[in-house]
Image (tube, rainbow, N blue to C red; front, top):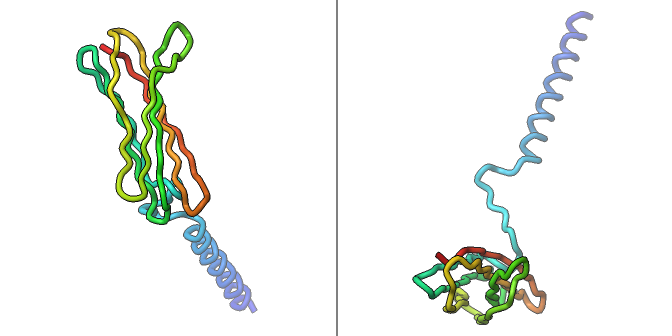
Length: 139
């Protein structure tokens, strides 16, 4: 009788441990799993450089292989007191390859500039839009 109770307890504990072990792996993503951030956009990058009194801003983006088109606009602003003043913008679109958007601008030493990169990728007719900002001071 005592052996049956101990055996039932042992089997109960064993089943509980096995269930907990299974559930802990079912709900945890593998360490090397890659979860896409976007459905249609694969990657985005934005940079700004200065050389003397000339600045350059460049946005680059890639679409997912399932997306049919990607387009982007880089907007440039200058900080005046507490307000961002629009300076210029550049646009491009592609159906294949890497999207590159950007241009050059005259900058003034000590002035803060902001670039805003707005990217839209389309899977069929469904758009997906993401925005990225980059702020820097002209040396």
